[in-house]
Image 1 (cartoon, rainbow, N blue to C red):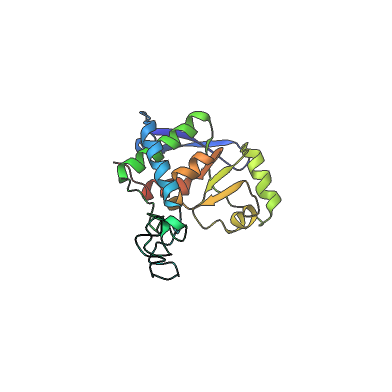
Image 2: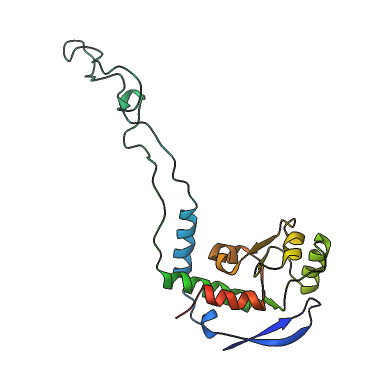
Length: 208
């Protein structure tokens, strides 16, 4: 078990949370992290690029001149790729997705969380509840917690006032436990969980 400090909204330690050993990793495999990052970037590509082949461009299929006796090179049709009318082996729409086994994705998430923990950029708070849905209250909360730069806040989903208050902050990204991914963790300067969202995260991403 890993003991994590739990803070209230005034940045005062109130208790410790016993997190499962499977939430973090001790043996960091950078190759696995790189493989998952490449796969996630590839999955974001649309893959809609397309170039027309000789059968798809408009134009006559008639032979432009006779085969022999003109002194010119042989030509079969005006839509030939050699004349720039079409493309040989051009791009066609296809998926760029790469298959990544579940265990690799789990290890990559473990490694990202371990990195944030070592850097001191991993925080656990009692809850995100705010009395009013005001953006200035959310800014004050992040300032009290010492969360600077890009912040990834993992919410349980019932913090209505906090969601309304933080959605206007460009440097704050709100996600549910099931929506936490490796790229979001690596791009964030700090990650903050509530106790409820951390428990839910462990249920959504079970580690064997």
